[in-house]
Length: 335
Ligand SMILES: NC(=O)c1ccc[n+]([C@@H]2O[C@H](COP(=O)([O-])OP(=O)(O)OC[C@H]3O[C@@H](n4cnc5c(N)ncnc54)[C@H](OP(=O)(O)O)[C@@H]3O)[C@@H](O)[C@H]2O)c1
Image (cartoon, rainbow, N blue to C red; front, side, top):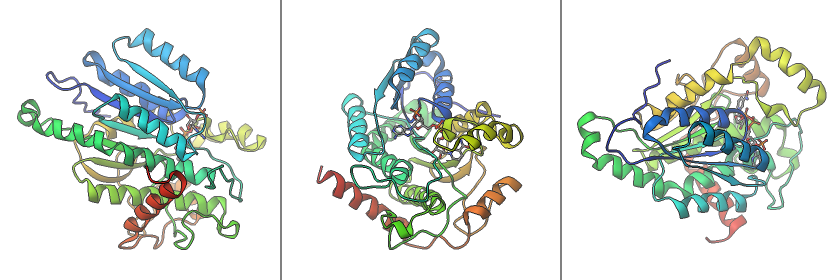
């Protein structure tokens, strides 16, 4: 795959990147690839995770192999809390004036058909999949805009046409959106909640938040990416029989994390602004037209989840944006 990085060029400000949910799985793989891409030019990396020991091991490893890149681990015991997500974003904002890349991959998969409420009164999965992610992205927009202004104003970029828009990448599931419950966007009533509804609603809310952000800030990159089925720690909360059979099934259907990380790196570096609802190759998985996507396995999974169909309408992105604002205000007060 052609990874077109612009990050080796002379005379550019150092790239600053933030990876959230990067102590394992796709976030970790994407971060490892990113630090490699930074090369001699260097840059700065922040990453967030709940596992302190693993976070420190990662730092050690990076220090050994990429000593010239300052890497900071922000320990966060539970990002499903909006107060925690806000704290993390505020730490980054207090230390940096600009930011080039945010990769959001915090998430858990469990099969429960009932909501699990956080102390803030939100469903844990929906919070990790959506609210935590867009709270962090929204708070850090001023830093992304700083990079945008800088990139635009730099002669070296204009001459080399090397402009690479600052961007946010959310690793979840475009193509798996389904009709959302517009009367209960938080799925707060148990009768509206199911594992399937939570997944298709989370996928739709991710795509819609990215759509709204791309309308508001078209010069930045807003990417919701489906990684395929990848063997990671995502099955950790599943029943034993699934954990045991998953690696066997994975032998046949799973994408390799090592390959997927190349795709995420491509999306993180390609010179394209605006909305992208894509798979990890960068191919469109924009299902706002009701088309289904993917190979046989994916289509089967999509059918099982009840995705596709008419889930999108004009004005829905704005509605989800307002909902995110209301939830943040309700939980955190005016900040
Ligand atoms: N893997 C797939 O096949 C696949 C397919 C489609 C979509 N996705 C989505 O892609 C995203 C990343 O998945 P992955 O496969 O990389 O899974 P993963 O290996 O489990 O990584 C998830 C990351 O989120 C962190 N995390 C989970 N709950 C957290 C919490 N409450 N507070 C703070 N951090 C938390 C985990 O921390 P720990 O390291 O401490 O556990 C881990 O670093 C998920 O949203 C998943 O739904 C995955």
